[in-house]
Image 1 (cartoon, rainbow, N blue to C red):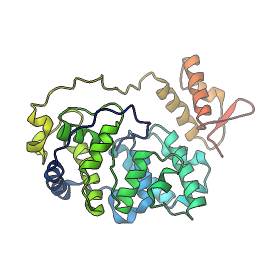
Image 2: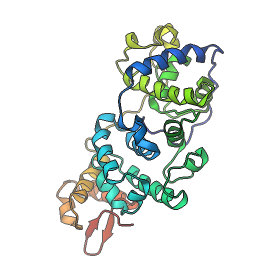
Image 3: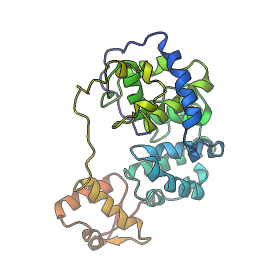
Image 4: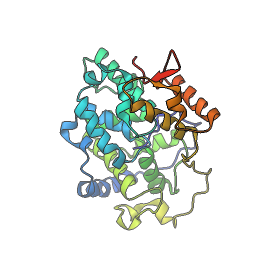
Length: 311
């Protein structure tokens, strides 16, 4: 469930989908999901639409095992959007902990404020209204509408895109950014009725997360291995643009994380000296701190002190 709330690239040629392909894939994948789906708290009925939305924000570019404890603590503290909206945005950043990409915390807080002000505290079920919320992009709106409200939407996260790329188009990996062709393919693969379409969205995502993984895929456990275009083609190696890696050590992201950790651990403003102590290289440290301020994650105060944002 990684984030794809980014602008699409220029349209790629439409991928052909055989008329019989959707029906061939639906049954086996849904049956596999019924047997193997993980029992995750945001999939339980009591999670509600707010629980689903929180999980979608947290799961962007972050594995489930890291999200689970933070999710539980978050929902215990803020069980409804209005509860989060009543707090300072800095508290959302503090509670975000070490999930990474902390701007997601600010966006989730902004969405909670908008839900409270515009929708009487209830996460809207209308796809267009979801899209209009701060921090909600194409993927998240479709995911909340589908998983929380059982609607029929193409939910295209990285796992789903990889499953469709292999099963339907015969390539190892999807493009780096979601294309118009992928969206057409996803819509073509959607079951007709809403309830089945919603289950299909969750099932294809789970298949990508557990079996059709980016590395060391387990085709022996795949319910559609005999129908998979990539498998039938002999699993040709990726020949597209190099896949983007994610480095961390020594990057500005690491420095930002160190600086934010100091601020999260203190309920009072911290001094410049306290921040300077966590990273030796002054130019990179200053650049990272300036970026945190520009992103609204850190608020500078008089006297060279800093705090998490209050507004």
